Amino acid sequence: MSHTIELPWPVPDDRFRHWAGQFADMHDLVRDLVIPPGLPRAAESVLTTARELIRMSYYRYEFMMIGAATSVIAIEAALTDRYGKGTLASHLGKARDDGLLTEEQYDLLDSCGRPIRNSYAHGDLTHAALTPPLAIGMVRTSITILTKLHATPCLGTTVVSG
Image (cartoon, rainbow, N blue to C red):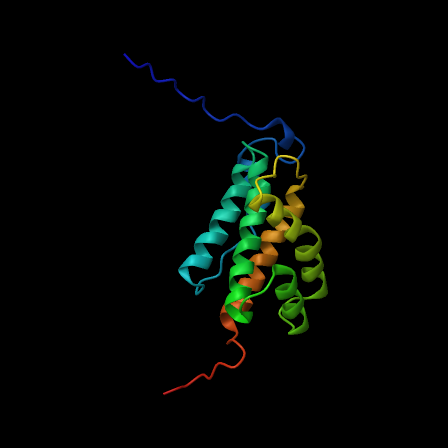
C-alpha cells in the first residue's frame, strides 16, 4: 500500500524578515501595482501573475525574482510584436529611441531586468539577489510599458475609423 506524504504548510521565508513581519504586510508592498483595465487578457494575466509572485515571495524568496523575470518576459513579447525579430537588448534600445521608455526605465530593464530574465530562462535564479523595491520597480515599469505599448498603434499601422 502506498503512503502519501503530505507537504508542509508554507512558512515565512526567513530572508524576508526585514521587509515584512507578516503576510498581510505584503499587500502594502504591492498595493500600487494596479493592472489597468483594457490590456489584452494575456498581458493582464502575466502582470497579475508577476505581482502575485512578489506577494507570495513572503513564503519563498525566489518568487520575487521569478515575478520580476515574468514581467520582463511580457515586455519582451510585446516589443517583439512591435519590432519583429531581434534581441531583448536591441528592442529595449529601439523602445527608448522611440520614446516608449524613459532613460530610467531603460536602465532598470537593461542593467537589471535582462540579467534576471536570462538567469530565469537558463534556470539559475537561486543565486540572484533582488530586493522587494527593485522587483516591485520592475513590475511597475512593466505595467507602464505594456500599457503604453497596447495604447500606441504599431509603427506603420493605419487606423481606420468608421
